[in-house]
Length: 187
Ligand code: 5GP
Ligand code: MG
Image (cartoon, rainbow, N blue to C red):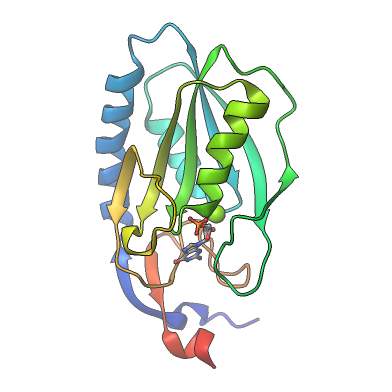
């Protein structure tokens, strides 16, 4: 095994400490927004990228929450999502009308995936109040009219890995978010 695999990181954008403190701030905003709601709160994590963020965020939230997950994939050419979304693992329950839904995702990039998902949840699961919480937001790349409601970091248009985000399924375990060296994906 190549144990020196962290040398693919060009620079660290969000350190472990930065992430910890931003999650605390965002958790307080989420609590403030939902605390007086009559509806139950469902945190809906999008696999696999959200898994590290979800775990840290849910521990920080002082609210009664339920958790569920979906796995989505977008097909089309290249690494950029196209809006042609396939559900790889869906929700067991059909009627979610008694819930507020907070989608928890690693990054909002073009917006194609979550734009599709919000519409799907409204149509197929009777969801009315849907909000979006992401670790990262890359607004420069947006193709759909969608924005983050509770976000930790806005980042420039660079390919990042770590803290749940992968490159060819590796590096999700890094405890920070770093920019992948260009020579790795351009070679
Ligand atoms: P979308 O373009 O639909 O907003 O984002 C779809 C997915 O692309 C994200 O959930 C994430 O998995 C992936 N993605 C977008 N930007 C990056 C990035 O910089 N690094 C990694 N590892 N994945 C990304
Ligand atoms: Mg993702």
